Structures are given as C-alpha cells and as structure tokens.
Image (cartoon, rainbow, N blue to C red; front, top):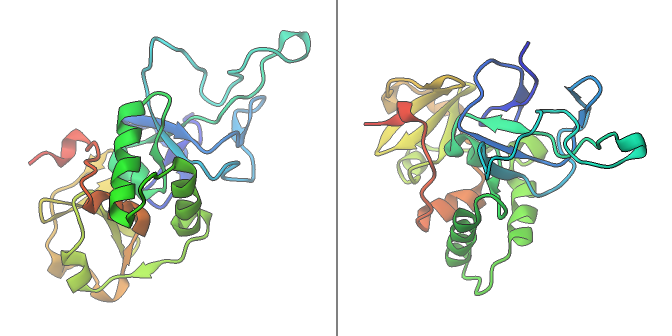
Length: 220
C-alpha cells in the first residue's frame, strides 16, 4: 500500500503509487510506528523542496530517520513528502531547500528579492509570506479572469472546476500524479471557476526569472 505522502498542487497529501521527481517536508507530521500522518499537516512555516538523491543518503519514508533516543531507538525525523515535479511543489507552497539544493535555493531567494525590491532577502521572510498565501495553510483562493490568466508566467498553476493546470509556453497542461496531459484551450475552461493555485509570492519570483523543473510529460 502506498504511504500517504504524495502532494498535489493544492498542497493536499494523498496515498498514490506515483512518487514523483522531488521530495521535501513541512517538519515532523507522521507517526513512525504506524507510518501514517498525524492530524496536523505541517509543523513548520518552512515548507521545502528536496532532491530524492543526495550524497548517497538513505532514508525510510515515514520511519525513524534520526539517531539516538532511549535504547538507541531513532526519532521520527522529518516527514518525507513527494511531488510530481518542482512546478507542483511550488504550487503547493514549498520552496527549494538550502541543504540539498543550495544554488537553486539561493537563486529562488535572489529572484524573490528582485521581485519585491528587497536588498538582502532571507528565506524566513519568504516562508512567512508563503504561509499566509498557500491554500493548504489557509490562504485565500484568488479568483482569476481570463485577462489575468494570459499574463501569468510559465510554471504558474491554476484551477478550473477543481482540475489543476500548469502554464507553459502559452499552453494549459492538465495535471495528474502521473504527469501532464495534452494541452487544453482556454475556451474549454469554466471562466467562472478560475482560481490561482500558486502563491502570489511565488508567482512574482517566477516573473523575476526563477525557472522550475518540469516533469518530462510537459515537453514540447
């Protein structure tokens, strides 16, 4: 049975077979005995995106991954979450990790600074803003008009009638845990139900030039 640790663009966590290209976390939100989620869906405001392979390190997803404790029993460690691609992770409200993705994290923070005119941007300031905006931590849904949709950058994700779509090269790609489907025309969307999924802070960072990693199914 798949573990409940796959994240959709809305930031909700599911148990599905597809793992995805990236992992990440929101702190410790699982019980290592049952390898199931706790009621809470985050323990920190810092929601990060990590690579699945880093310097040969091995982890047991939703297990005990920290040494020590009584009788040598490991502590839970952070809860591994998985994302279809970085576009999905950004839509869910995560940002790159400074430990395993230092250069990309620096680029993300620098682009954020450029977007908002901040001379010395810091990750905690980004986390605080994102926590107020991401859907999964209570951010308000932002309705979209078709004109606003046309002005969004590549890597932004929207929803129409509950279906997520990613924007790439002027195309709308329907999202699923398996990858992206064939592009759909704007006329096929329900204009009355359009909403922006990706947080406005991240949208501004994308506009400033941050280039997220796409799933191979998004290729032209």
